[in-house]
Image (cartoon, rainbow, N blue to C red):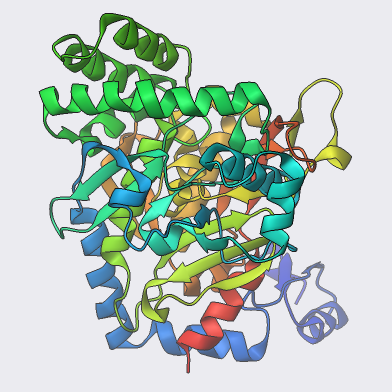
Length: 463
């Protein structure tokens, strides 16, 4: 047993040690590799096997994935949240992530709620706003329940201007608030006078300039713009430099032909030019529109939402209706700004993981090697992240290609079964908010969607 055809026999044993014992007893060297099926429990492994061999599930996944691939989001304009968001109430605030109560909110989201109350004139000072929220005088609902998304706290109040997008293929609409820039901003829980002044200016000046510019331009097709930005070094979550520049070029032309006052146009263009994240919210809404087109296909195991509210991480799955599968949101590991560390960080927060759900962001890190300077790691690891995500997705999106991978499409269509079967959690690169309201962003890093969300979804899908 120690030789085969005159050559030394070397054996690697994977899994059950009893096989290795027998081989070792016969005198052959054996390397013992500790391994177990990644499905977790026998019940999970059985559910994966049943779903992945079910022709009806396969057909449902092809239908959902094809709907996502064929979606054609276009930017139509800018409107006021209360006027255009479906189901938006007058005393309602939309937030990121799955449903949450005031008491369960972390510091950043509570701070953003307070700021929105002050912005809307529902309260005159922070303590009154806090009392209103605690007394149940405000309705809180996820952005995702209103065809919308918002980064970090995601707070969207009735008077805010919002991007309006439409999917020309399936006809669904999607929305997002406007990006405030960096520093002390509402989405990180800041609500000082300068934060509120900027938000009011966005409503009275920036929004109308964008509205007028888009009226001149007509529809802006977003998938070609996003594809071009990927080729220019963006991954469309933490790096939107190229996409912002491409959108800026379009907006300039429309704004200069509009009837808005020249000082307003100049101020709006200066603001856009100084905010490299300006496109983020547009890209998020585009991803939302593509994924909503794939939602609601019975039997499909394709993930259509990943989102965090600073307390819980949640996913939704095409074949499971509007049910959320949630677990505790992780604390992100990454690179912290000077003076801050992991102990200062709040739990992961924001709807911006819709980018990874749609196959960009962390899934497209191979397109953006420079992103590692912001979130940590190396260019080789960024390349590996994009390659590894192909093991948990239904296919590739050839509208979004990765030059570093010979222009292969980005891996897309996260499959609950493949996640549980491989044990590979979807990667997300994201900003890190301080655990206290108003401090703002303190770093950026890489995290993963928790496996518990997927095992919960699997159990429901297998019923």
